[in-house]
Length: 354
Image (tube, rainbow, N blue to C red; front, side, top):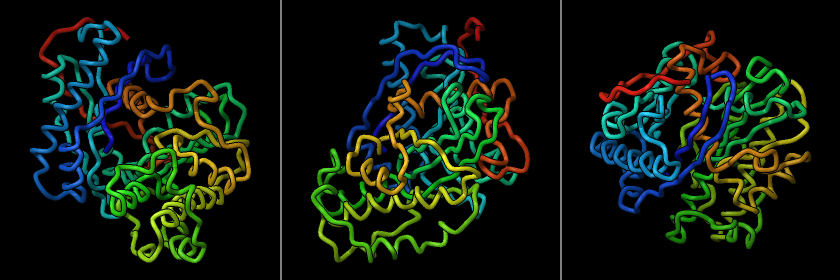
């Protein structure tokens, strides 16, 4: 819920031909507060989704202006929207945002609703970035793990990077990402996040509380599996100081990633970390200690960690238009490779190009 990441990508849905500029548009605080108010899928969803779509349109326009590209030169926008509810056990997922409205505002075809088809076919609906991760990983030594730390953390195990998305893949949510730390800092300090991990670095991990957190049955489930942002409670930390709570939550994210390795078909040579969590030194140090192999930000292999998720949904939008799979049995638990997404055509007629 920090803002909108937008990125330009040239792809045929099979290979990455070129990366363009990216842009981040932070949400204004009133919108961020309203997004928090609809977490859980209740409240004025349509109204907040409308305003969220307007913010995405602003981000698209700003990116195109920065890149000096006209809307008619862009084939499709991948619009994920904001997840406000994810309950895979009940076959429910909800992302707010109006794809048809975005297409009309920016004059570009839009693909959204990426998750529904997967869930209808028996999948978890998440994570969806693994095919993009595997495509990016071509040429890297493996096996390797790509860990995205957003509100929830998810991992892609890439067994044979040389084969890209055609090689063996396993993906699932490992556990908490930044959401619990953010909620803790908001609750205790009224701040959006633990900037530079300063609060966590000032505290000590409470191993007894950490042990309680790690008893959650989710960690014993076999993947593929996925989580809602609010799947874990802060209640066990209520008696801790601000700093010790932040340190314990950073360790929770890291230890959950370590538990994920028990499901890997083979050990990995290194972990590449994307998402906002890679900017938290306390969290990165906790990961290095817990995983006991090389842990590095994705920038170490030339990827753009700030743009990675936006690039992934641009890639998936092209795959959707071409009818290619967005998810696999090993990435979401879907019965068979499954495409998805819903295309909204813009009224403006544009040139067709890959």
